[in-house]
Amino acid sequence: MTEGPSGSLSAGASAVPARTQVLVIGGGPAGLLLSQLLHRAGVDNVVLERRSRAYVLSRIRAGVLEQGTVDLLRQAGVGARMDRKGLVHDGVEISFHNRRLRLDLAGLAGGRTVTVYGQTEVTADLYAARDAMGGTVLHEAEDVALHDLESASPFATFTLDGETHRIDCDFIAGCDGFHGVSRRSIPEDRLKLFELVYPFGWLGILADVPPVSDELIYASHEKGFALCSMRSSTRSRYYIQCPLDEKVGDWSDDRFWEALAGHLPADVAARLVTGPSIEKSIAPLRSFVAEPMRHGRLFLAGDAAHIVPPTGAKGLNLAVSDVHYLFEGLVAHYAAGDDQALERYSERALARVWKAERFSWWMTSTLHSFPETGPFGARMQRAEFDYLATSRAAQAAFAENYAGLPY
Ligand code: APR
Ligand code: PHB
Image 1 (spheres, rainbow, N blue to C red):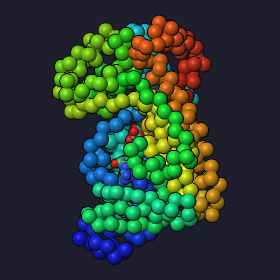
Image 2 (tube, protein in one colour; image 1 turned 90 degrees about the vertical axis):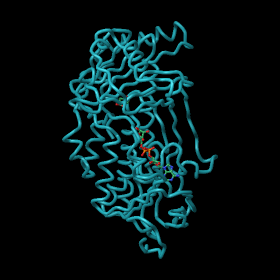
Image 3 (cartoon, helix red, strand yellow; image 1 turned 135 degrees about the vertical axis):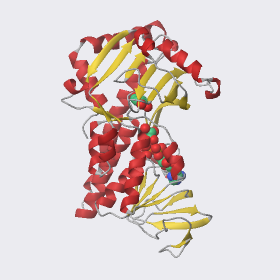
């Protein structure tokens, strides 16, 4: 047990301070990155995370980093392992009912590439960096409640090791994901919610087998969508489109591999190396945006404010661009007493969010099977692919979006 500055006793390495400048709710990638950037800029902050560190680090999420994400991770001093282990991809493949198209990202998007490096690794690097700097991340903080958000002195209350605590602060960063408390702390009549729920999910598998291709393949097939991705030259990540009522337990590894092969062009399926899964899960697909991303002294960032379907891998990248804008605003406030960037945070973040929402929605709509849209819908998908396959302008637009729009 340690004695905290607030006089409270808490188990574990971190004592609970009575006050901080920025209180960050959520220790996922958005919260940890913001915490790391702020600490390096001399802004005091505390992260409150509901789960254990082991739990956070066991979550398997997407793994494609835009150039801007790579740059910001480096700026935050957490780029070393990513630079060693990440796979730089300068192209991506789309297969549409067995027609193939390789998009040369680097050539089409002015040299911009993407880096394949799992979100789980990004999170692990951020935790290591927070530890190295002596950052305060309080895990298993339960019943977090936010108070006085419209005043100049907001605070949060929570329970840790059975004791109630209070932390006062200047600002609260709501980085606690879609199911977090931050967005729900904003009065309903102050938020506008936009949502589209897709009538299917993705069944994903992680396996220690070499990837079927050096580059990602997004495959549209009459049986449904499939994605061939990877984490390294020996670890693959594959997904297939599945009905929402599927149960993971009904999917043996053999059943998954057989279904995946059936969703891929024959030559790709023939090269597929199969093996036992390390993880298997089903994720529903949704598009969601909450506007504005600010309420008084509470600023939302990442999944707390928006969700994209995984097609295009924009989720983590959007969380990082939010953090970029929020960090700029907070630093301008503390370093120069200038609140203009904070005032514009929601507007700037949302402008980029909506463009990523559009791209993710477009990729999802073009490549998945939607029987309910009938033959007209199927012809629209084919026309989208034809246009992409035959127009350099369309390819440049794809590459610009896939590699990531500028901040
Ligand atoms: N109090 C404290 N922490 C909370 C609370 C709460 N009430 N509710 C949720 N959290 C924590 C979660 O346990 C999680 O660790 O907030 C964190 C939010 O992390 P993410 O869900 O990973 O969201 P974010 O950091 O915005 O990352 C963006 O990109 O690839 C996408 O969806 C993917 O995780 C992803 C995201
Ligand atoms: C992944 O590797 O998990 C992944 C890659 C690209 C996507 C989505 C997920 O669009």
